[in-house]
Length: 267
Image (cartoon, rainbow, N blue to C red; front, side, top):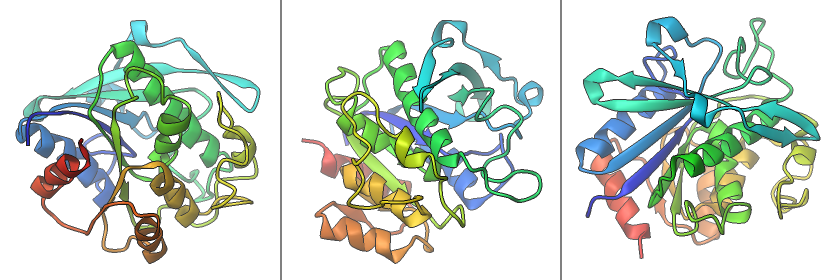
C-alpha cells in the first residue's frame, strides 16, 4: 500500500494507563502502522489516572482554549502532548476539567459508571476533530478504536463532512468487547445535536439511554468499514455491519491486514 496519512482516535493506550487488551492494542496499532511506512497522528483522552509528570505531558497552548458547547454548557478544550521515544510516536491528549481531569475511565472510585459518559464521548470526538483542523493535517484514513470514539464517525460524516481536513477521509471503526454495563446517561440524546446533526439522528438505533452495543452500531452506521478488534465483540454489531453492507475485517492479530483493509476502502 502506498504511504497514507492515518489518524488514530483511541480510547486508551499503554504506558499511560494500566495494561489491558484495549490499551495494549491502542499502543501497538499506531506503531505497527507507522512501521509499515505510513504517517500517523494519535489521540487519547487525558484520563485522570494518567500521571502527567511521569509521562511528561505538557500543554500545547496554541491548540488549547477553544470552548465546546454540549447541552448549552461551555467546556474548555485543553490539548496536551507526550512522546513514546522508543516508538518515535507523539500522542495528543484531549483534556477538560469537567470530563477528564481527576476522573477515571468509565467508573468512579466506587465502581459506579459516570452518568455523563455519553457527554464525555461527544466532547472527545469533537475535541479531536477541532484539534486536527488546527494542525492543518489531512488524514486519508481515520481509525476509531474503543467505546469513547464511537461518535467520531457520526460527527465526521454529518457535521464535518465539508471540512477540508475530513471531506475525503475514510473512517474505520474497531469494534471491541463491552466496556460498560449500563448506558450512557439520560442526557446523551439531547447532547448529540451539533451543526446540522439533529437529536433524532440515531433514532433508528436507539431511542432511550444508549447501551454499549447501540453505541458501537452508531459508529458502524457512519463508518466506511468495521474491524473486529476483539473475539468478544458483540455479534449484533458485526451482524449490523454486514446488513448495512459495510466491509468487515474479521478478528486478526496482524496489523498488516489492517493496512490492507485501509487500501480496500481507498478510491
